[in-house]
Amino acid sequence: MIVGTLRIELALYEARTLKDKRRVVKSLKDRLANRFHVSVAEVDALNSPRKAVLGVAMVANEQRFVESCLDKVVDHVRHDPRASLTDYETEIWS
Image 1 (cartoon, rainbow, N blue to C red):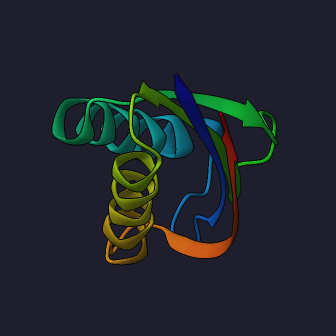
Image 2: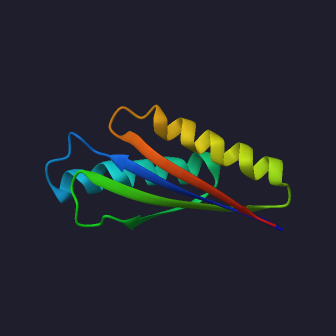
């Protein structure tokens, strides 16, 4: 069993309120979960309207598959016009 985690830090420049932030983060979380079959949660900076930190996790039986999928998640987030990717960290456990 291979477990992969991904921590994504985002800057939300257009969000002025927590309500604006929630709208963007919920949409992004739902799209990532549905498209890549991963678990996604907001894990930090909950009270900051212009910053979001997402945790992404997945389990599979091949390390290459997990790494590839998490790389695709990062690319997808990187190209989202509503959020700017500021940092990310990937960890793989076997």
